[in-house]
Amino acid sequence: MISYSFCPVCGKPLSEGIIEGRSRMVCTDCGWIHYRNPLPVAVAYTVNRHNELLVIRRAHEPAIHEWALPGGFLEEGEEPHEGCLRELMEETSLDGQVERLIGIYHRNVELYGSLLVVAYKVVVDDHERMAPNHEVSEAGFFTEYNRPQINIPLHRLIIEENRRFEALAGTPGETVPEISGSF
Image 1 (cartoon, rainbow, N blue to C red):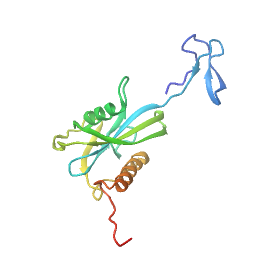
Image 2 (image 1 turned 90 degrees about the vertical axis):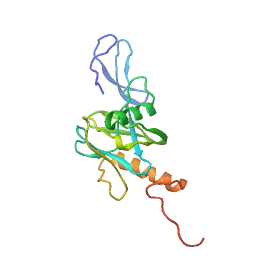
Image 3 (image 1 turned 120 degrees about the horizontal axis):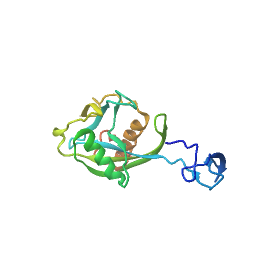
Image 4 (image 1 turned 30 degrees about the vertical axis):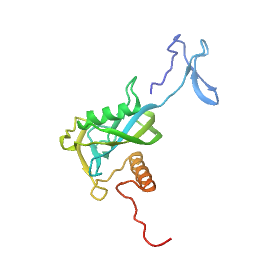
């Protein structure tokens, strides 16, 4: 996020003030207020017809060399689900369909500042034609038991929240617990 020192409307220096209960930069000359809004991001929790999860190894910062879920920044005029599918296509050449929303999260990261992350469950049919782009050094579909370690806390949370949803809904998922005994 750009940190303004001067007003983009009138060019005067900005001052820090408490506006609407928060510390904000404001132009005391024309009244312009710098609202620091989060950048929108979409993440694709992507499964194939065998219910294996797609994970990618990042080739660039942030989190270079880490295993992650595909995703990236939304573009102007783009709906979150469209951005999710575009990012999946750009990073892996895979077409998918959004099955449902997993969650919406806020995170502060060093490189970009405030992010608003929208995570979707996406299903792909033809995963054999996967072709990672320059942002991805490796990619593959994995079961829960052979998946590489994912260290990005938000991506781990998305995986866990999807697992919990599917367990509660009784839908086929990677770790739907079996219940035994009588009630």
